[in-house]
Image 1 (tube, rainbow, N blue to C red):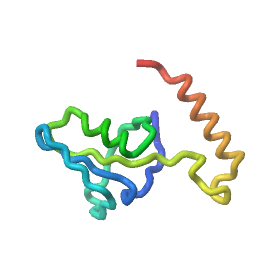
Image 2 (spheres, helix red, strand yellow):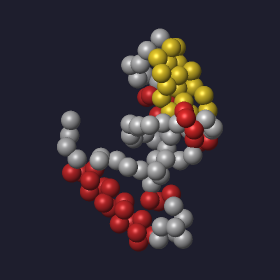
Image 3 (tube, rainbow, N blue to C red):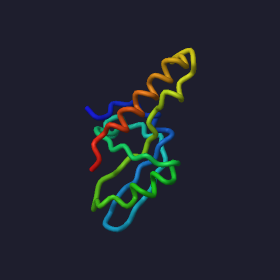
Image 4 (cartoon, rainbow, N blue to C red):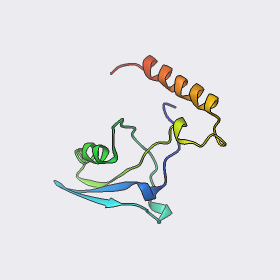
Length: 103
């Protein structure tokens, strides 16, 4: 398993619908649980807008892509994830990133 991170609520996300060359962006939340995502791509970007821009260029003719932020250790409060644990988690992720095969 290359990634198994929790996602922020769909209220902070967006969906991009594809219809030929047309792209339609819809902001969350998405209340229909039968329509929540089943799989995901991880794309490292600096903002929600940049993620939407990248994913709007996906080569799909129809369907949808939902854009959501991945939780990082630094995003948890200290009473949930103590700072020393967060630092260990961040260091492990950085080590995994450095050791990942390049494609």
